[in-house]
Length: 384
Picture 1 (spheres, rainbow, N blue to C red):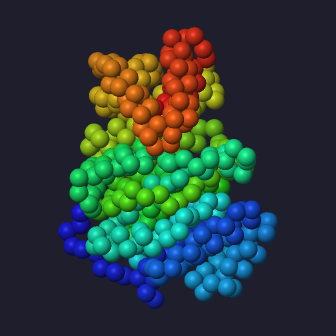
Picture 2 (picture 1 turned 90 degrees about the horizontal axis):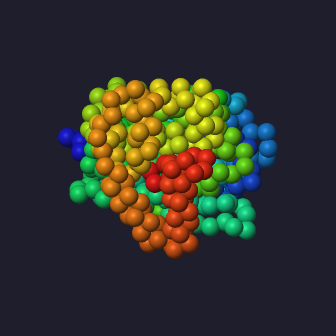
Picture 3 (picture 1 turned 120 degrees about the horizontal axis):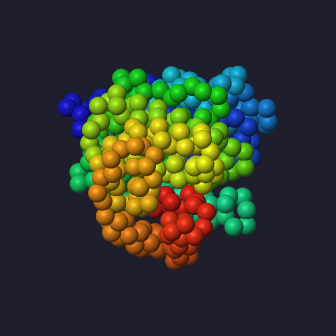
């Protein structure tokens, strides 16, 4: 918690500036902006940054700008997601900064509720919420599920810090299901990496904000609806090895900030094991580049902390010690098995029996892979 309560520093009385970084998203942009404009209790500024779109996106932005004085369009040449976000932050005038991806949408009053919560808690550095997964979007099988940390962020007090609830960083980065005090971003010089395209730059931003925040408030109510794996999205077409580059960027932040808390490190390492599982699934450890990416990452992890991760299987821990070259640390597989049972019941209660039963299939394939009966898959890390 901050020693001195931050003061409200909005320009022109603006409570929240929401940045919408756009590149060729005409199919969903009208829905996204309309859902955002439905916020009517807080003073809202909508900064739509057009990153050189070649489809009809700019025309849709201009239509919203013409009919809603809160909307402002910045039309610029293509420079990538990180540069777009930085331009939006530099132009923002609100007490808080929020993010809306143009192919997603919001349930009513997301930013109204978050800002009202921020005021009640003395303007913390961050206000965070869970989100809704839109699974298989735009298909007949489309379904809504709760994200994997819904109901699991339970600090003893609020505001809190990451050390009080480190699980906050170990799931999908979901930087758009939060608002950030603008002065907090400015005073800590928190900005996005500027690389071509999307570039997974949300990951280092997540770590910077969560590690440096001295006051975080969590609302266990989902508003943000995230469309997963749309064709052409960065998560589908990601460059091989990019996840490991970004994990190392995050590790650099962790080291610069002098983070030694084991809970934070455990949650951070879980991210790396998830990336490793996905790479092994897609490429296999026989590919020299993959083996080197994973080995380098493993060597940046503390062996004692890795051994204490209860959601990591024994086979994956043994793979870690083999590839890192570190002396194995004794561990038991019983906590991992208990975590699988807990994950099953959590899935059942949160997303229903069909979803939970589908996780049993993942567990069966994982155990078979560990016994060498089938080709290993990314289900290695499904529980983490």
